[in-house]
Length: 413
Image 1: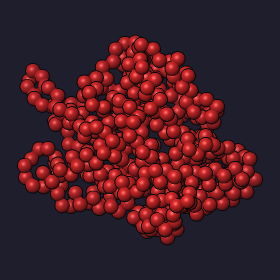
Image 2: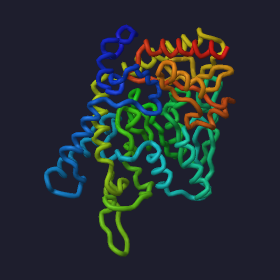
Image 3: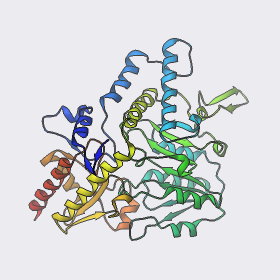
Image 4: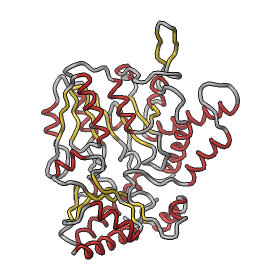
């Protein structure tokens, strides 16, 4: 467990930190607070990938020799672990993709659109859950509606209900905002959308790594997430497609593996999940993601969220004490947010803050728009600084962040 009496079990966190080579092989300690962008990789994940390349490199599903069979077993075992991790009903509901972005695009280009169809998304979405719909809008003549925020940084669900019509084909919403950290009520949103027959796609890139994600409980039709945000390698992700709705989509990409029969006159699709996985897949990526899930499964997921909540609470409390010139975005209710704190310092550009944090204390944070330009415009700000936490971050790192921010503010005073 990561938490004992609401305080970080430092011995456990220190043990976890030993699994991450990048944290142990530097003269000046790295304070990595950009986990919403990508997480560090433990040696167990690195070893699993190396083992595949060194001991049984082969393609999957295509040969009967031993190492090909071993590779296929490892690849499909990864699918089973992912299905269990998000409580999918069947392993066939799990589609491997390059990441969240490709998963969302697979739905965007796969759904059988008709002119006049409507999509509802929100102002807090990552560009990956906005741009594909804008492309589809131009391509098929559909309409997009954007749900705004209430004063407490929550989605305006009354507006969502007003936007729903018999033409609403899809509601696409993030589970957790990658800028605000806001946790959206997906179950409630799904129930509202399903009443009028709309499908629901959930961008779970920021939730699956940090909290319990149960697709049966959420009730969504599609759920997308990335491996690299949950200790896994880059270039691998997942699209969950609820059993029974796969025929709502045509495979947007064609090639080998995704077909059952091909003649010069046409072809028929393969069974799920392979109909949406054309060509040679990212085998090493899937194996690496399976190792990451093994690692996370050895931790209490609820305790992981508590660990992050503790760090977020500490960060917010300290930032508020430093100066009134620091503006913090997102709900003050820690239970309603994941491990993300975005802020600005009056009179100091976000990029200057990030640069000085790096130069002075080797602290890595994100600055800029975080791929959420519409949200920043909605909030009336040009950019922001984002600190995001994970299992290996500590209270001492939060203290160093805040102490360095004090130094920066003195420099600009």
